[in-house]
Image 1: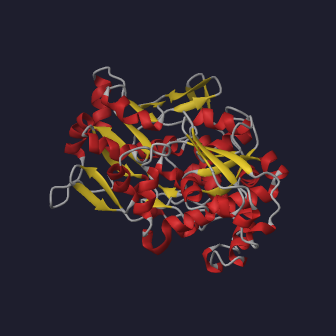
Image 2: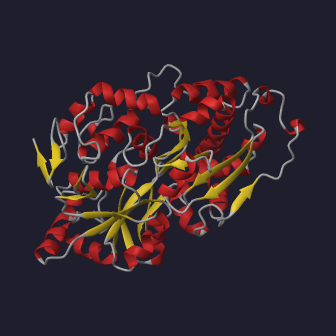
Length: 454
């Protein structure tokens, strides 16, 4: 693994008087990340000197997979990391590795896609509505995949697809897409954590950078992953992205920056300094209508960060997305890092992830609405975020109007027209939301001996 270490001297002359007011409890830090474009705030905070401005001497280190990354934060080898939003929540409620992880900063909105192999795409196309110019009409529903899956089942062939981790956004997004198209993505139970109970489509874990090669080898027929690994399939000519998560759920929450609760308690000023640097990085990524994105792509294409070709990363990071060779469309919000309050850790985002854990059986039993609220507030920490934002505003480095000072932590409900299945989402009423979804656990239902009961 390649490391990037700060080489600036530890001198107070390098820090402005305003920024030096925070007395850092710890100034040498190591943060982990996975090679995805949405780790950009960490890379930018490093490369643009925002960590240095705060007196922080940071090492960024790529991790082999999401489990290794989480374990590194829990055991203290890493001070924090670019994380799947589901990881702090799952760890805190004890699903998988148990530890109290918090997030004071959300890293981005959108940024993912679902890709199928060329063969599956050819089999889907007869069922996909086309526009007058002969191109597919987007968004493409999983209803177009359903007859293909049914044909494979009639031939006794399992239909395998990949996602990156059991509590990843990508797992919940591909499940959402499949269910919205009438396909069963399968359930988890306490004694069967495959997630494949009763499944029409068998989902399994593949690390993000390995997705294209795994699909090319025929092990999986498609996958849900973040960029640049959907666009990589297009460039390699091995697959077709059929939907972006922006089309699945407009401006959906994505990664977070995770630290242990103990770290935040022991090093409160250091935590604020880190969040300040990350907010500045997110602002830089989105400012002036994404004017800095080409420079960001140059940074990310370096082997120590994402390491994919410049053209592959630029395809989605600079406001477009290519579905098939030559079918490049404008998607200006495919990657959002700051606008729409992207960096604010909303409780309602946490609640959505928890509802999906419950929907598919990772949370085995029904919970009252109050439980969802309590867990969200134990993990997502907007109070830390706003304290850091206030410091930036006071220092003249951010605008007062860019932050939701009066928020209670819950977004306004997402309207039905912004979600592919036409079902609105309100984080304040998680159980009513679960009841509104046609496929998935509801009420007191549980999964017992491979069957949904109740």
